[in-house]
Length: 468
Image (cartoon, rainbow, N blue to C red; front, side):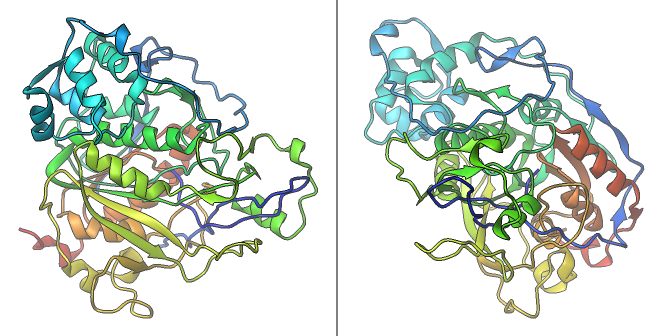
């Protein structure tokens, strides 16, 4: 959904630095490609129970006013006595991602490999090596109990021959996608506490929080929810498939939460005279367990570590180094000029080819001859976007284009769980792939549909024989 360029804007009636990120749009592609006629966006009619974060009756999906973000770390601890002696048993497929251990390590601790009792889970939670993935330690057994008891009414939809756009919460919509049918996931998600997105809806999560994704009360909440999505994505991805996750870090600062980059730019230019209390939502900086005011949150690295603990391979932490960024009016640190792209896989050796870096058009992910060397490295010098498309934060075509080109063949299926204005869909169709785009916003899906519907079919000749 979101693809952003970092900046900080002046804060009216607020004593501290602020962080507001946005990204200039990319020039609309005038000649792109596709495969078949569009499928009408599907609206998912059910969702998870709000009290448990699990499946239940549909909830009201009308957008609500988002609250202020006050990052106070809750005081909670595991209540061992509440679960001691329980006869409940949980499958390894639920336990291992929840506790962040490999099957081999869990067996060393408990002597078990396939099924674990509540006492076994407590042993795992008590290990020095434990670190939460997407459920806090105090809630793990409750989460496992609810998941074991909850009915899973899965109604899969056929994958498209061309492209398909679907509206709903990502965790709901992923159930519609057959396992191991996606060859490449590429997305840029909302970033923590930076934007008021179109049609934002508060939804329940496994950690017990009910919020719009990207509007969590703490950075840890955002990290947990990101990993929860990655855990749900993993079984949908082919064994040799890849996940490309674009995310930028945040700073723990007081800031107004704005609707788009243009608002932030006006504030930086002194053209926004609104006071602190006049904004629809604000983010505070006090109350965290350890993060101080103005400190960098280190979100991308923490997502990568937890994804590894949850069972994925972290192949590379890529730096997207941007040559043009908006200024950050602060005097206590250097300005940011980068975002991260985390390359994740389900096995050590996913499908991968370097040749498109040398042969593809630069605007669709090929080498940027002005700034990049012949070596495909973990630093990508890609332009920021400068176009339109109806989305307040859109990433440049070259970014998803490169990810797709490196890890797919013609006819493969690409998924963007936060499709926004559909940039990743244009790139996927250009590279001869099929495409599914998901988004919680009907506004964004409608914009993506209009954009993709104008694309004509072609299969790039340089890709027909690649990776056969």
